[in-house]
Amino acid sequence: MLRFRRSLVKRSTTGPGVRGISAGANRGAWRYGARLSDEHIEQVIVRTLEETPRGETHWSSRGMAKASGLGRTTVQQIWRAFGLRPHRTETFKLSTDPLLIEKVRDIVGLYMHPPLHAAVFCVDEKAQIQALDRTQPVLPMRLGQVERRTHDYRRHGTTTLFAALNVKTSELITPFHQRHRSTEFRQFLDAVEAAVPRHLDVHLIMDNYGTHKTPRIRNWFAKRPRFHIHFTPTYGSCLNLAEPWFTELTNRQLGRGVHRSVAQLKAAIREFIAAHHTNLKPFVWTKSADEILASIARFAQPTLDLQAAPLIARTTRSGH
Image (cartoon, rainbow, N blue to C red):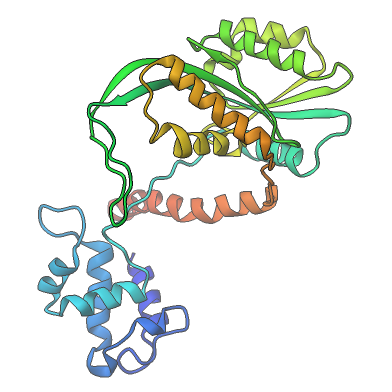
């Protein structure tokens, strides 16, 4: 961290005051001229990155202003110029799959260079979709007022939606089932088989859910050599193009819909699917496997360095 600190200060405060800030920072964020020294800027940056207020997990602009003796607006401008946002956090999950590289190249290759005389499907399930009704009537949007709804709800049952998205055409095969077991998944595969002409091979892209790998399902595939399975990497289901379609379903129908029974829920989903089929727009994959793997490497290296730092420090202190 000390090496990082020195590098940051050297890059960002190379001249008197903040006038010498490098091109890497946002020059437009600076409003206070030369009355702020490099030491003040370094103090705020280092405290933000390396310390936390007592009893708290992150700094607020008011807390940092009090601790540093600067104005709150000044602290905000420093943070903005260096891209520091202590109030925000994001999640991540690096894949631990030993075949990550091979699987990324395999699946991206299917998207960017699909095989001839074959159909490629992205397969996924949305289990336990709840039929929810609000405890009081929804107040519709009006001029100057957004739609309002109660925070609580009544639950009227669940259903599970299976989906096979044709990568080339964006057409869907979407049966409903009450449960999510290998029995229902096999019935779903029967529906996919019936929908694809027999002269075509079938490539299925799906995640590593246990239902996809039971002996019953493996036997089903073993008897059908025209089916080819491509599993996404562990924690890498974002490579499955059925995921963004389910996201659209949630955002545009399920999230704000009111369904007083499972039948109403299914009808609403079927209407959404019918609308999708009237205006088919296939998802287009644009990033190559090399670009994806390079992006993972850029993200993973700082993470590995951060994890290794405590071990290196302990080793150094112990004299080994």
